[in-house]
Length: 345
Length: 295
Image (cartoon, rainbow over all chains, first blue to last red; front, side, top):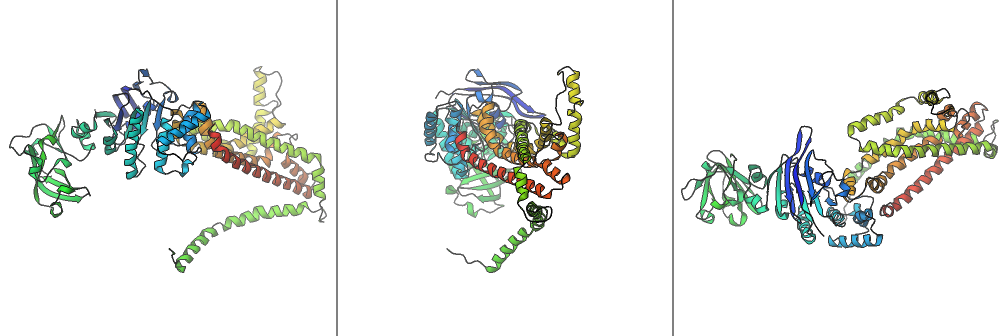
């Protein structure tokens, strides 16, 4: 299957005074798995719907390969879409749903049936072809929606929060399966989610969106470790944004940078674990919570700012005995301290 | 595992169910009084002579009369004609309303509903003003030279059909519009994203999913049409005589309660037949829905 790159060139869309997309530009490579990540109202779904052809941009261009699709009707774009609520046809059984795009293309019945069955096998739904869609579980519906979106071999696939209705365990299974399917097919995929873990697990690159703008586009690791804005830092996990003044380097040198970000799980309570090149934060324990795989401690620095410290349960021998009000020091390796350009704590 | 039920809790559950059932009693009473009793009375009347003796002569008289059968034919022609026009006009209109923005849809809906808020007699005479030989429409047509002669628009089958469609269209539209409005817009989007043209979206998604609404609308139109009286009486000009006007004539002109009752029972049987046929049709449609949608 030949997949295509996508170019989003200065696309804007406003609804009255509300700007849903603010001059968004983005290049997605052929065969890439790119996730649009952001809170609700960040414009990620609007961007996806613009690519699908259901939202008409106010300005800008959308290209599929080198073809301008900005004004192309949705049914001519050759894009497979998986909707948040699956959008399965309730009046058709599983097989008819999956064969639907082939039937629209006047594929001979026997061939359509055979291809639909093969695609159902690919998403591990063999044997459910004649089932009514109402009789399926959430995970099975999700698989039917996937099968229906890939059966006609589109060159691009769009997924709008496809796993948000599933429970946690199933969601994690489906994350790996969708990724595996993508790798097998090599199809350019744009995936929308508000779940940062999901984005980290699944993506080649993540585009973090907020208020209609792309904040940062990068690999999951760089987005997590090297956020370029405070918003990205805080959206991607438990981030502590501190002024250099609150941080003491244990070798005595001054901490530098305008604003520093230290992830909660970068901290150690044992100075030795943080290594020789490390920073220390001193404060009073305000609260502690056991979260299964780790402890979350809330530390009030002397300036009043609160810092979240996350200690893996395996290393947190003494955490259960800690008492609120106790003085303590948290250490983080200097390599884990990231200076955010232009941000203030 | 068996659970022993506490009899006191069971009694509570029973009392609750009985209370909610008892709420339907006033309605059941009215229906019994206003519908069932008169029907039983009509059935009895149909077997009585004017002198009050039992007979089957009323049936023999009515069923052997050619007038009855032509009235039956007229009733069916009017009802099915009205239904056909309602489906042809109402289905696209419902689709337009369902896909319009909410504010526009509400405004259009108000226009559609306007006839329902007007007394039927007023509306029917309103059509007379429009459709008459010297009425507005004929005046405009001949005045502008579009037609040389006056068109026979009223006091005939055409006029009656126009009046009936005007009355029935909103009744047909409501359930169809409700069904179409309830279709998940993502289904339409999904269909289009997989390559469906607008025609294919309508044929493979919208129509199958609003079939229930079209069915309900059709039932309502047929039930109202079969016994419709005022419109044929006014706009038919005495030339359009369905069963309803025959019943009225049997009563007011001939005081023939026996014949009128037989005609009334004929109407009832007709409604029951149509109801059974529609139900059978619906069952058949439901069975074929999955198979047909695959085509």
